[in-house]
Image 1 (cartoon, helix red, strand yellow):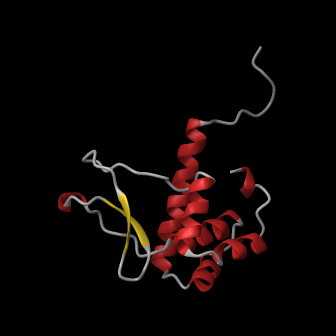
Image 2 (cartoon, rainbow, N blue to C red; image 1 turned 60 degrees about the horizontal axis):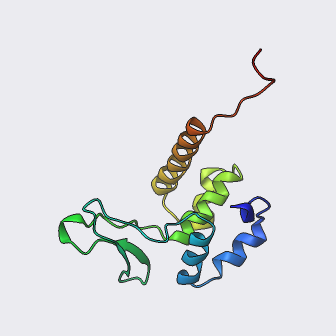
Length: 130
């Protein structure tokens, strides 16, 4: 995650030029994507390429196949960057060509992730308690 501290727009575009497999591997290396996953049924999940060539985690037991996201990893990462930079929804929609409702959903997820993180790791301001 240290790699992302000084992450600039040029860095984003450099990473977006990677092949999908390489991009996902990089996300795994910095801890933003699972290297392996286990389904709720306790079976190991595998990466599977869909009809558009996008990799998804998949449990091969038919009863445990969740609906796949229609937004690719690169687009989600780009949306996360735009959200972190506090750019408006309209700009994110334009840059990613993602529908308004999906951008709203992603921005909401990003907020929820931050809330969970800061509830688990509160920041104390000021001096110590006497």
